[in-house]
Length: 276
Ligand code: 9MG
Image (tube, rainbow, N blue to C red; front, side, top):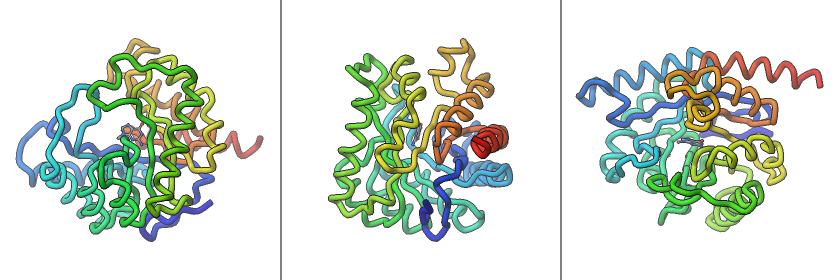
């Protein structure tokens, strides 16, 4: 089960780690775009040295209540970073965006994966992703990031997430995206309360029934804070537990802030899976 990420082939039957690289103003302590580019590149280089197979570059915060960003601002934040990482580092660059213009521009700069938390629902996103001719990650979300955590509701979260993703796979296929280029993500924390997230994680292997590799992201998320009572910068152990469970349940890509530590956790899970 190999996928071609803009010329880099990866076996999706194995578990890979994706490092998070946010290029939003709140992720840099000092000003100046050149300085920010240097900092972003240094972070990416460290994550690659630590074993990341992907670097996920995002210029729009999807945290509940985060301010929206103009297309031009998102392009200005993301493109220089995508360009320098694609040129200088041996890694698959993923672009975390819902904006068609950013998808198209990033594809020209060498991006190997489009990661859209809005499941290609913005006008023009399906067409832009199809033209990019790289794999896409389609994530489940209920509502919009600004308001999604206000009162998420499901009758059966597993079934509804599965139906939503299957519907978006159909829409993607109709737009010309090759179905074997689609990765699915249940979208932990995106319009879900703790019980919804736990039900999805407990049944993660069932998502494979849709026939696509699975990506998950739980690193440092509030679901882990709710379970442990810990602040965001104290959630490493909980994030590693979530990563280990996901790897055991067959996730192909785990999106994290702490690459080095997660690589070790994934190695343990992979070793155990190898003997059962
Ligand atoms: C950008 N982003 C933040 N959380 C994420 C998650 O859980 N999955 C994916 N695919 N992207 C995410």
